[in-house]
Image 1 (cartoon, chains in turn purple, orange):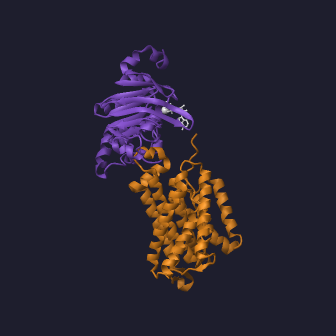
Image 2 (tube, chains in turn orange, yellow):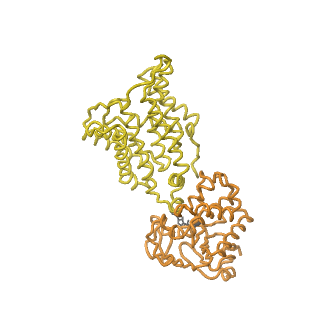
Image 3 (cartoon, chains in turn green, cyan):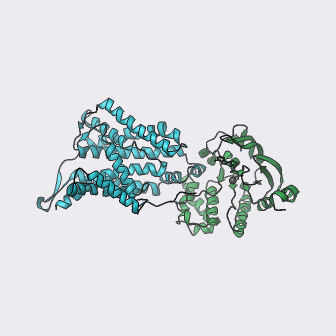
Length: 233
Length: 292
Ligand SMILES: Nc1ncnc2c1ncn2[C@@H]1O[C@H](COP(=O)(O)OP(=O)(O)O)[C@@H](O)[C@H]1O
Ligand SMILES: [Mg+2]
């Protein structure tokens, strides 16, 4: 479904991503784990067009999207929930969801809103609330709900568990599993390696801009290297 | 009665400031930049409407439409050529560019229309006489105020209800996230300039009509005052620009009437400074601390 082939990304002189290749197949949860600063967010931003790779290609559903501007990528059914949620804090919950449906045909808006509200009852109770006043967990749900409004086939999530209490982290991961079971392919970026590996079909480990390991979620959870580096022994 | 007539002339003047301030605040609110050339777009609107009325013999409403079209195109071209390449540049670079654009427009107008003032027709004659002739309100004052209120309400509805208006607010909060929603940020900002400049054209017609003269620097002082009004009301806030413009006009009219014509501008700015000391975000602005 998604094929990332030998991308290199620079911030000025900083070589942040060094020849990374990986792929995501339809129906999978694939996770990209790695320490802070490894380059996880940079990869997702490059896929969604906010940053450009100087080499290689990014193929999605058979099309090369490496030169597609970011605002045209979402209508190809690829959605990105960015790190730190980045919801529109001064807009209401419902307006945020409407922005998620920006590229969609307006006639389906009501139906899509109802679907998201059914999936996230917390948002349903808070339709007219200003998003900046939501709790962290609710904001994350809104960020995911907003991305779902564009009917993505592939959903990229950047550290959805960041800053959330363990019980909320579990809720978010349950939501991610449910999304996959309903047919959405997931590319999950996490620092919380334990949780991410436990739900992932396959995983890639990123270190200073390079993929150093890959395998199934189960294999990596059991690998000594990973246990030492990311799972605290 | 005398006080009332000063008040009315203040409201009339303030309505013109408010129209200009609405354009300023719109562009600032969405694109997060101070378009210091906004006042000069007003001047261009003045010349275009003057030509449309005197040389082409068009009626006032048609001249307003022609000026709106011309200023919309001008605003979009300025944004595309001068500001868009600086989208990720420091805001100081953008500010300096805007000042450059302002002088460019003024000097171009001097070249084309000469620096000499041209007389501008009063677009609406006649007045309403109240209290047995003790108080007269000119129709132009009434129309100016009415048009200003309509513009304010229309802009408020546009940004709060329409899909494009909401997209503008999204762009103003977070350009990156807006792009991830599929919003074309460049096009949205162009659209903002188009609206702001179309408003500038309308303001230009009312401004010139109340001054009854027009020259290449006509837009510059009202531009600065309208910017002040926008800050006064809370920059980025649509009702704030309206309120700020009206109050500024009223303060100016009162200062002229009761204190001194010579220092009326100084008084206006003194009031602004006091207001900003007490309410740094302006009257209706929300104080948003810089994110760290
Ligand atoms: N805007 C930026 N400018 C310069 N360097 C950056 C920028 N964003 C990220 N980097 C650098 O790129 C590297 C990868 O960052 P990032 O992709 O955010 O890592 P991660 O998401 O894995 O924590 C880091 O070394 C970071 O310092
Ligand atoms: Mg990151």
